[in-house]
Length: 206
Picture 1 (cartoon, rainbow, N blue to C red):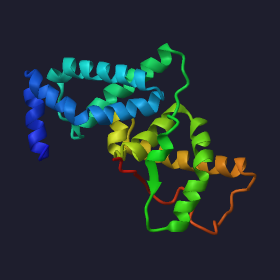
Picture 2: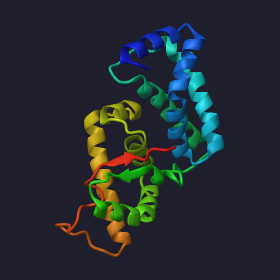
Picture 3: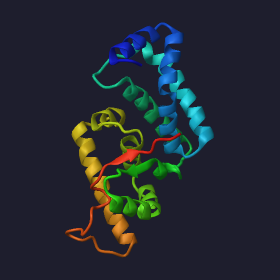
């Protein structure tokens, strides 16, 4: 898609033209599948839910209205609702997929910090899985899907400020959990950069 204006035109056509909707499908299916997979941890279920998400999107796109956030946020909101229903119907505890952490990596500017992250990866995944489901979802949307706080808020039905607050509390909880599990008390002044004071970026996959 060459520009936001081109996408807007495609969305308008997709309200009446299935081929235009097919183009939107091709643009977003991989991102939506990734999100669903990380929320379910099962490829077969992720494929089934992704198909249902786009069926629902095609049904409701005639009523779609631009609310000032990317079209992808509308798709993620549909995905969010269907995945929540799936977990409820199957009485499943929401989880992060086993390989989720491998798609997060720190920048190259700090080798020491990168080493710290690699050493903490297994403990970090364990700590994430103990988080409430909404905090797990927040981390996936931010560190895997690379969405803004405003986009995440639109998906999760919260304000941008509420997402910022939830994000801060989530990182504090993870840091405290890691220190507790490692048998250390949290230092008032860390001697080296904290694991949660540098941004993550998504690993580019071949």
